[in-house]
Image (cartoon, rainbow, N blue to C red; front, side):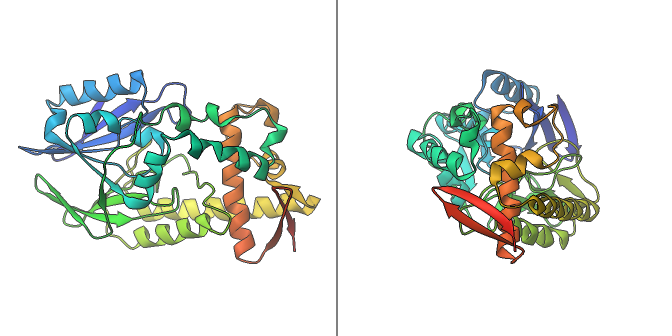
Length: 323
């Protein structure tokens, strides 16, 4: 489905089959000689058909486009090979761009075997080969045109400024059009669902970084915030306040779980509340166990770095407890 969301700006709903997200909002800014596409969808037949059907209806030739990838996840970057083959300039932040290319290497995914032990997910029958990022990633590395905070991209009557918004991923980037008060934020701020904040590394507080990025965008003057999933947001400050409240409640929930004593990441995640059609942890699909454990880990890391809890690494596995 195609929706005109602003003057010369269109949203193509790229279907994401058998995925809880249901669809990706791919945006097209149409210019006379050149158009800009923001994000692609999975490297999957149905996604390709959905995106290119929309481009055809908009009379947009891929050869006359540029592509902006907001972040590394495969539902955003999975089709970049098709654009590279067409000679398209593909913009990305350097941090996530490098990871996108690493996703094509089996050695990158083999590190998930260590994470499986770290999170205690080896108690479950899970494999990185079930992960959508593994299944639907690009076919081979691509040559990105890396962008940095403050860089400008001009299309039609718009001058977009690149904005660094890490948190959802280590190097997510957005586009801000100051004159028209428009912001394309990838998965930074979503309406009706909460962006996942994953695991940034043993010594990184990715959730704290996410909070800082939310505060950064809170100060922007925005009339239309175009997210990558679900609804366009007209009151970004209200939505940010709701997200901050959600994470405050989440952090308190983790502390409550830890009142039981020392626990692994997997055991903490299994005791948290999740909006998923499963009666219990055993009913979670393998990929959702990964996502839930990473989400739990981001909150545990934040609590550890602000001095609320202790952690210990034993035999490759993390254990957390209250101070």
